[in-house]
Image 1 (cartoon, rainbow, N blue to C red):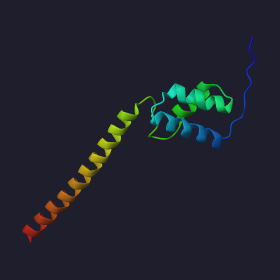
Image 2: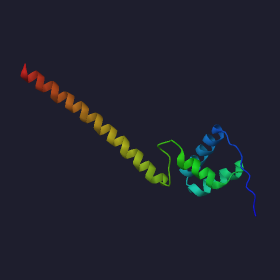
Image 3: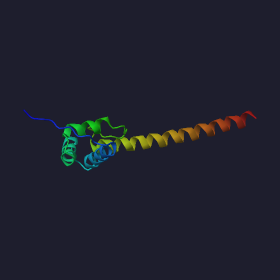
Image 4: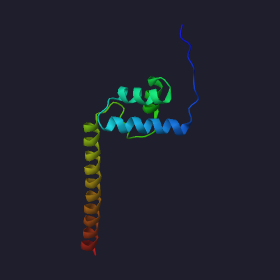
Amino acid sequence: MSVRRYRLVSEDVRAAAVARCRDMIAVGSSQTAACRIVAAGLGVHYNTVRNWVRDSPNPDAHNGVSPRLAAELAKARAELHAALGLNRELMTMLHDRERAVQR
């Protein structure tokens, strides 16, 4: 029967582990592979690190999304943001023109 030994890991170490995993995932490693490598360095089970990555508050966490898909999503969000800004400008111009006609 194996004996489990639990270690206390500080929040700073957890944050660094999550950041390292994300860096590895961004360059093409799978989430499991990244978590295994980071966990081996910390002396914790890889599932522990995987849970840290999954539960991290970062909205841009990959959570199993491929880097290509994450890049496409970021591009689509930027285009949407630009379109919304343009729409706001056009609406302001239209309202200004309507006010000028009414005077």
